[in-house]
Figure 1 (cartoon, rainbow, N blue to C red):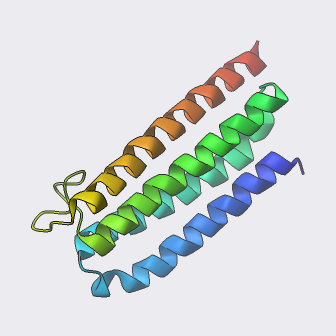
Figure 2 (figure 1 turned 90 degrees about the horizontal axis):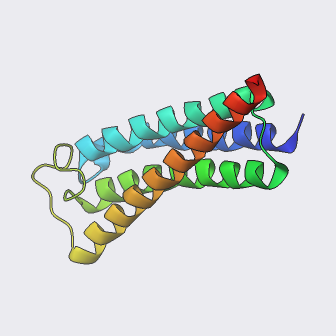
Figure 3 (figure 1 turned 30 degrees about the vertical axis):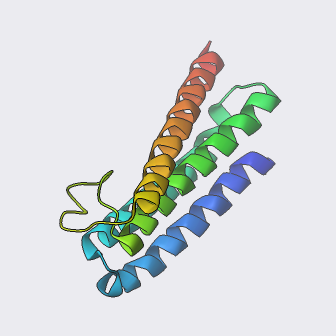
Length: 140
């Protein structure tokens, strides 16, 4: 198996496992609603990485761009999961006002969560755009 698809599957499995373990800890988190959000986000992100690993054979990108896309996807999804986990641990609610209602964290904690969410969202959005481009190129 090509290294990139296998690595997508490995990172997806790690993220899925971490999310399952987090699910058991939800009741003891300072913000259980944010914990459920982190748990769900991690499970979905793990599945997304599995999907990328399984569909990678159809993506036609130059080798350097393949690696860039992989790093953006994995880092982006992990950053989003970690931001949600930190929000649940710290009670950070500015970036997640619905799930974090009634909780407040320090200014630094709120900024950390916001930077991870925005950075992760940008990274995975760019990665998905590159995958789409690679899928369209391979059809031509």
